[in-house]
Structure formats: C-alpha cells, structure tokens
Image (tube, rainbow, N blue to C red; front, side, top):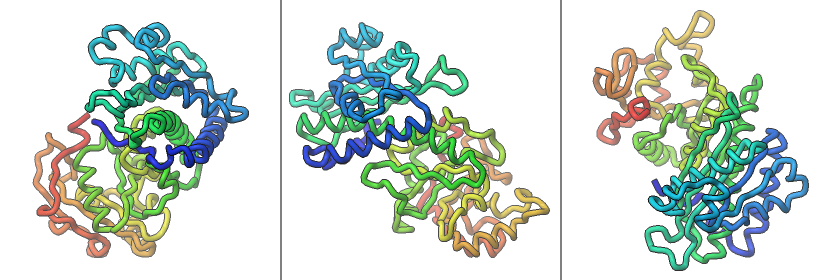
Length: 384
C-alpha cells in the first residue's frame, strides 16, 4: 500500500528545512542517549543526506554508526548483499530491495540495533508510476535475541515536486522513521514504571502535541479497514481527530515486549497518532477527565458485566468513576457470540448498543452508532 509521506512539503523548502531538521536531529540524539541505542543508514536516493545531517550534531558519534550510500545497483549488491535476482526482478526502487538493503546493513553493522534504508526515484525523468516514490525499510534487533531482527517496509509518495526538495524529504523520512522507533522504545520503558503517565506519539511533525481526547483503544494486530471506518465516523461525531490507544498490559494477554511494541505501533504511526499506556482496564485508561472512547459492542458489554470485576471493585464502582470524570463511549455494533467473542469462526448475531443488557447508568454514558451507519465483520484475529 502506497501512502503519502508524513513529511509536509513546506518543511522541506530551503528556508524551513534547517530549523525543522536540526530540531529533529537534536531529539534523535536525546532519545538515542536515553535508550542507549545505536543506529545506521543505507541510503540510495537520499545520497547520504540523512547521514550528513545527523552527523552534524555534536556527540552523535556515540550512537550513529555510519551510513552506506549505495546509489548504483552493483554497489547495493557488493556493499549490502542485495541479490542480483531481486534487483533484476523487482528493480532498485522496490520493497524487496529496501528489505535486503536494511538486512544487509544490520548484518554487516553489529553495533547498530536500528537500521533505516531508503531507495526511490526522485525524478525528473522517472516513469509516472514511480516518480517521487520511495521505499523506506526499518530494521530493529529483537531484544530477546540480538542476533535476529525484524524488518518493516512501506512505500511512500513524496509530497515535494522539485528534486532538491524531494531529496530533503527523503532524508527527513529516514530520520523521522528513526525518531519514531526510538520514541516507541522510550515510551515502552517509561510506561512500565509504576504510576507513569501515558506517552503520546505523533503521526506528523505538524502535530507534535496531543490535542484530542477521542481515544480508540485496541490491539490493532493488525489494523484493518473496519478500524479506519470506525475512526472516521467517530471523528465526525466528536469533531476531533482519533488517537489510537495501545496498552502494553492486557487483562488476559502477556505484557507486550519492546520488540512486539515496535512491530505493533510503527505501522499505525503512518496513519494515526498513538497513546501508549500500561492501562489494562478502562478505569485505568480514564487517566484524565472528559475522554471519549471508541469501542465495539463486545467491549462495552464486557465493561458492563460483573464477571469482569471483583469484590473490591465492582461494575458500579467503575461506572461511578466514568460518570465523575465525564467519560463517554461511542459504541459500534458487532457480530458476536453470547460470550462477546468476535471473528469469522464465531457463531453469533449482530448486536448494537440497544440490544445489549447493560446497566442503565452505563448506557447513559454511551452514543450508539447504528447498523445502518456502520457494519463491518472484519476481525484482526481473522487477518493474522
């Protein structure tokens, strides 16, 4: 799937770029120091500009291992072990090539725990179908086994038109991807601490601060079109952007590891901002007043059932917390079983807010989205 680059064109213009990129590099330096992470680049279309830019930051040599600038196909093969077969079958501007670039980079750079590779066509003589397209690959070592690493790759359509601006945008994309991985690592470590606040991770340099109280909690493993449609409808109803809430803690699942957290959240950040928490329950997720949660009927049913609570804290106690804090729920109907199970293998029927047997005090906190406005039987479980 090709998506629009998250680097705004105006930040890559000659006058604006130095301030933006210096601030980004300073943030990367601070995060790399905090997380004791080292990184390396494999650059094609950016021609080493990402390396030159980060290399201008004093003290960065403690964390920046280096960059391999591989402009020609044979150099990609000789320096990064990109196979001739991949280059001939898919071309240099392709996802498989970007994958092999970052794999070759991390294989040959033992100090780096994060690698970013980029390849693309900046024009002006590119075929229209690849003009301004780049592939960015992010590789990161598994915290449980540093000898192995995970790779995530995405195709982007650059926003800029002039070649010089596009090269700055490509270099910015490399550095922004690095920033996001480092920030996820930092956020994961931070939210594990007792009583720590959630960490907001923006999806764009134009939206650095959280400005929305419309939270969509979920695992998003993976995110799908049903989630996207729910977010769009909820955003219209709430007149504010949706922020995805991902918790590393879950009442019936293991704690999300740092590596799994990166795998889960990084793809989300090219569509939505994310709030990372360690909040397993909705009472814990209600960390401040006037939050509106986007939920499915299966979720609100569980919130309203006694069996999910204990003698020390009842469903009525939870509803009292929600009421006192001004918490609201936008509820979407789901096909589900009597035990609130969902998915293609589940035998059940469609239920909306009106068909659920909820405490009336909880129902009063809910806004219903009817089946005529939304129905999706997609489930992340079915897509895994």
